[in-house]
Length: 238
Image 1 (cartoon, rainbow, N blue to C red):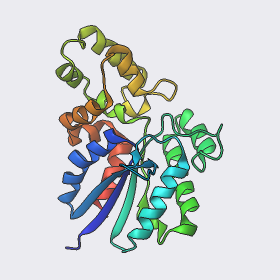
Image 2: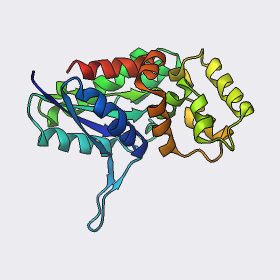
Image 3: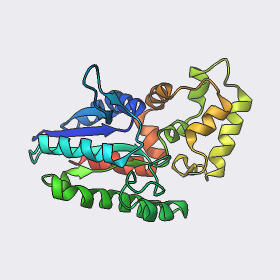
């Protein structure tokens, strides 16, 4: 059995925590040894670098180029955990993801697979001149935000926020899910999953989201989140 090495580049601390606590041990069963990093947004001369928050594609690009050139082995692979929601937009071309405008036209008309394919392909085309074997990169873009995973089983919000999360709050969140045809990944781009949760639970904090998703479990997440499942399946098959 040949072991593979996987580097996961996470958008922020929530994704980083989830990847470390859930994705990494799961993939180990498939002979995939993973390491997780959070995007470096600013390098400092003194003290730790600033990390997290995808406000500029150039930061993600710089991190990936460096990482892929440091690890050139053919058994070494790379993936991302980036949210679609609040992705750097085409109003700031120098900060935007390649193919952003085209991809968003597809996603906003519910052609999700087309949009995700465009983002992944354009990113790889952009990186290709500067990295060895760009085919080792399997980009993943979360529809539409990490907190979509929480909508797989909203009851866990009550467990983590018992004082402020009651029947009314859960009912309103369930209505938001049903308005997206019961599909967490379709909770729309205009008002993202995290915003909807915060509207009902003012004290919600993003790090808790990673714990809730872990509590829900990969089996349920994969059953309800089609594109998340496709991504994880591709990593299992490295």
